[in-house]
Length: 99
Image 1 (cartoon, rainbow, N blue to C red):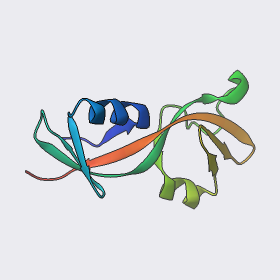
Image 2 (image 1 turned 90 degrees about the vertical axis):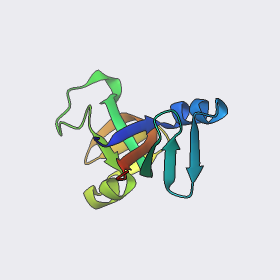
Image 3 (image 1 turned 90 degrees about the horizontal axis):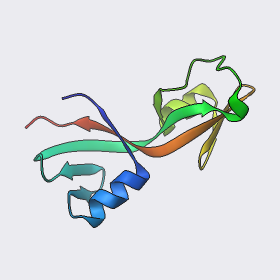
């Protein structure tokens, strides 16, 4: 199974519907019986203002660790990388555990 990005909003709705359980950095999708190790991440949605994407980040998912390594500044639903402002979707990146 591939890595999984899940938005913070989707995770909240799954949790409210008792379709997911979270224990520390482990998330289990109860209906699938699959467990993922999750870490905070963002999905790049668009360049703010509709400008072109000079760094080709739109559509990619980056963890907070990735962003720090890039020297990017992340605040809520925005990331500034070099001189470009991006709109992002906060969430979590999950790596599937064997089983």
